[in-house]
Length: 313
Length: 285
Image 1 (cartoon, rainbow over the protein chains, first blue to last red):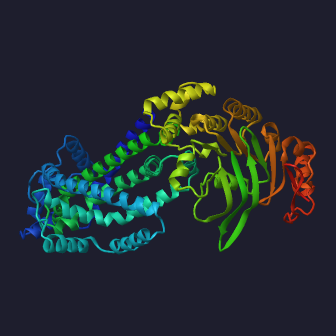
Image 2: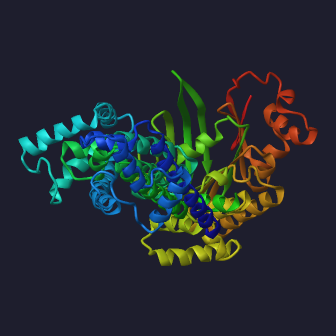
Image 3: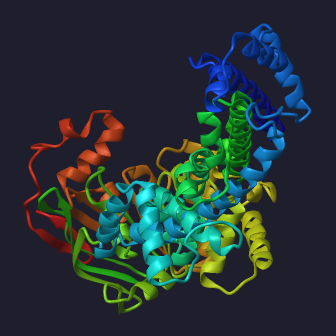
């Protein structure tokens, strides 16, 4: 196990370094010059002297490598710099906005697990029943709907018709339900299918037949055999989805007017605020890698085969 | 103990229904061992899983199976579950793929014990330890091992130890020694024999290996293509077989030739009627 851990931590650090390289250099490749964009957005007279003065101030005239080294040096001390546009502290802003998005994403994952495990297990256990066929059709319908449309339907039905939840905005826990449900519904079709397929596959395993031959109760078989066997692929996929949720919740945040990181980053993108963008990419990358690392560790704890393989390789 | 009457099993193969077991009748008396031999595909394993009711809707069963005088095919799912593992235990082939890779051997013992008796995890663990000691498995460590860390022979012995932990009155062993080395084969047969002698349980052993059957069985059934070709006292069937197919099976080991060389008209199905040539000895003539 310790060798397994050492290996994983090593590759995690390497991946983080790769993300930092991408975050820094990809933004430099974008053809629009952030300084020009800054002048255009603020409708300032774009004289060459004024622009050079800003470049000097931001250190943009230094060689790229030294800019990168300087950035990394500050990031390691958790200083992401000041926003190019608003001059506010990026680390502070990002954490504040990310905290909002993080909570919505966590709630969304919670919904995803609840909904897709129960429906996935049911339709696998009763596969090719009416219930199974009905869910399959419904899944196709939901999967083909864009998330903003799902959001509007939820707002209309739950918020307007029933009037039980706030339509938009941010503040109480009730505000979290509709946006996270929207995000969850978008992911559920994939997870229901994943769980259903995995469980149907498990049911045909010889060790499940042997479990039945020993007279185990069906509930024990579902818990210790079917669900346990589904856990590693499920956790791995959920960890992957975290990236989508953290980085791609912008649409939902815009529809529900939530002050999350998605909206924040849209504004930064328009302004070509490279300081914010590279900080965002790095931070999301960090979360994504750490979450996947955690999922790997949990999988290894559940499945002894992974643990051993990790040590041998 | 167990009586099988006119058992036929049909399975769905693409669009057709194929009869894989045809009109089989036999008995396993109390304390006796009945062996079933035959090539793979002769329907032997099908009989085992049909007896304990482990099959899905794609299998259709005709005939009657009595256990202690009660009709098994009429029993509810719950009643069958209560019998399986407790009254009737199954030892299966391919032990390497029969254990849940994510559970330790101890977990397998505990869940089996808890399935039929109201014991705590701790008590179950203690009983597992006793069982492990009785079958001379390597002590407490084996309970903490995971299936992939053990050999096929060890897993097969563990499977026997688990199977007898509820002291079943009927043991069904489906190819219990296949893919094991000769030493382990003998060990496993000895363990099965020992259990029968101590408990007076009945046993049904299925194998394609006549050597295995010869060591264990009191009575012998020879199957071919889903049909019984010979059924009688093991001593008679083994030493003076009446049916040419049984003679060929015996000759395989001695001559080293393959079955399709030894059996005339190998590809043709068995058609002769089953005749009782002497009391309790049936053969197709």
